Image 1 (cartoon, rainbow, N blue to C red):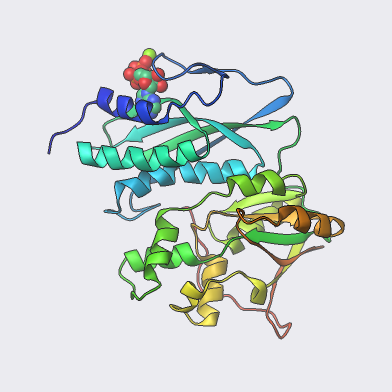
Image 2 (tube, helix red, strand yellow):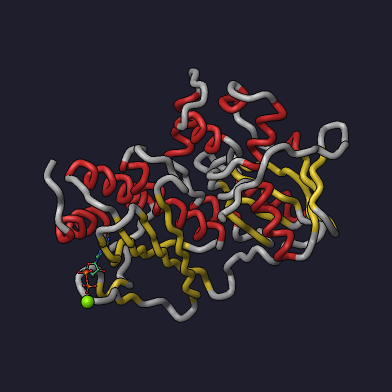
Length: 321
Ligand code: ADP
Ligand code: MG
């Protein structure tokens, strides 16, 4: 196993991900800093999200999934802001590295970057504990970004895709029981699909938006707190996949949808009077399905079951510390 130099790491990344997709890159990788320009009628949006072994992914997963993940988590934040991603910087830290591992990491990172026309414009490469941090920059037309603090009473609450698959996929990787649907759940954990193109249309209608990374129940509370409102969630409406139901009872699947992390779906609010227009505009074969799961209310977060009784959660929400 031959180890790889810093220059080789930077060159491998640069070769595959410096796409020059945008003429607004004046100076990319190679100098002390990158230089880009933003049109005066746009706002610049910046996100940073880092991932590290054993906290955000288990030891031993394929390098391709790590390369994918460190960019995907940032694309998901950018999508939640309703912004269009453009430029990424990558802090790359690993104790040692070989050619095969690098090749796989770069392929995971660059496949996703190229899919969304994101250019890698810089970063830093160090020998240290395994950690990957991406700073992503993107743009929105002036004042068109979507915050989490502006949900209004009466708004409908939607989510994209399925909830709970990724957390069960992680459990399977960590040794939980496997069956025919395990592979789907594992892939949903390893390769989260940030809802970038969905965000473009959602952000034309949404009053607020957040991405679901810590679990729906935890993340909707951030919206509630920031917007100073409450919400009623119908747990029977939560989008739960058949793959998840093959592994868990209905009650446990609902708990996974509420508390499980790593979904990287979007949660957003739409004014009731825009529901019809929004649904009509959103329908398209190449967008992930959306589900209305509840409504913004005056105060408190309430989980309601089919019989209109309160749903009692079991389990613990994700805590960063
Ligand atoms: P300096 O010593 O001036 O900080 P480096 O030798 O660390 O510069 O980096 C040289 C160039 O390569 C810089 O343009 C930097 O942004 C880029 N670079 C370094 N590491 C990475 C990385 N992991 N991903 C992308 N670009 C990188
Ligand atoms: Mg320098």
